[in-house]
Image (cartoon, rainbow, N blue to C red; front, side):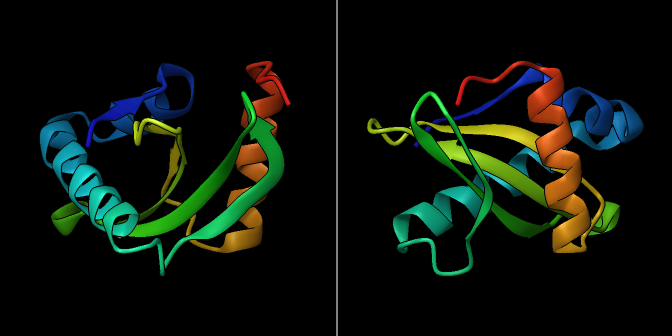
Length: 110
């Protein structure tokens, strides 16, 4: 499975943790690929909005020495995983608020 990162929603997190970007991407790719392959048992809907018709999901990912983060992503019909937002905010409702604000600011289509 291939994992891509949307610049607008991931840039700030990667900038904050610029020395661990490679490790963070590895952890995220491993966790999301595993979730998609096993039926997304630890994944929840992140927002009521859709991106290009695809549901937005989120899950918590352990990033080793960086700590934990919540990751919002979509999975298209070709099993391409696109990470649209990463945040160290772990509380679900606060994360959802930040995600929806990011979606609105970046003019994602519903």
